[in-house]
Length: 122
Image (tube, rainbow, N blue to C red; front, side):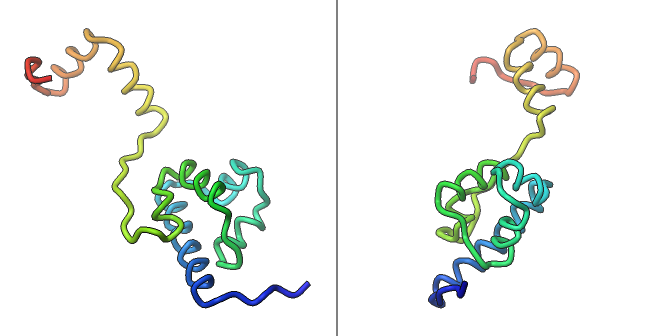
């Protein structure tokens, strides 16, 4: 089956998506196979995106961005700069949740780390 011809603009968007997907994968520390498993896609399908042969639909692009913790608008090429996001590991999220849920632990940890907090300004 012969592929239909695409416009220069469509080709540009596909290649931009491919480069940004590569960067998002690298930044997240996740692999192609991780993304394929998350989306229930073949590794070949992911390779098609990374090669710029295809681009996912918007809903799939949002799922990809969520999984890789990146800005979906940046990922699809509608914004030049990605908003800064500090990603937390699962362990860091659990520590933060435990910290937020225990005032006594907060005071202990703050003292241990030398963090002084003016509680009147919170």
